[in-house]
Length: 68
Image 1 (spheres, rainbow, N blue to C red):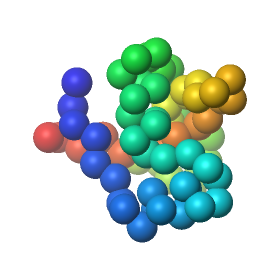
Image 2 (image 1 turned 120 degrees about the horizontal axis):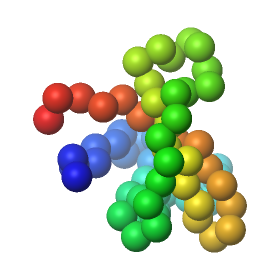
Image 3 (image 1 turned 135 degrees about the vertical axis):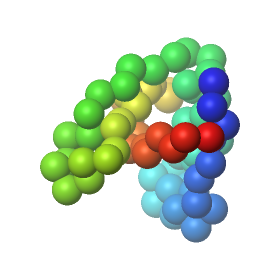
Image 4 (image 1 turned 180 degrees about the vertical axis):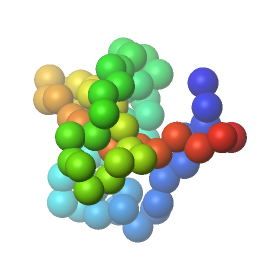
């Protein structure tokens, strides 16, 4: 599995506003798995989205996969 990288400013915003963190997202992906779908927003054609569950709540987590 490729390493996860995220923006710490966005992570802090997620924690403050949505009460979820990228660390929780990473843990959910590693422990429970995920489904990958095309990003539903046509504004970001390079992005895909993980569909994951954290605490019985479903999240769409946009991401860009690089060559690393």
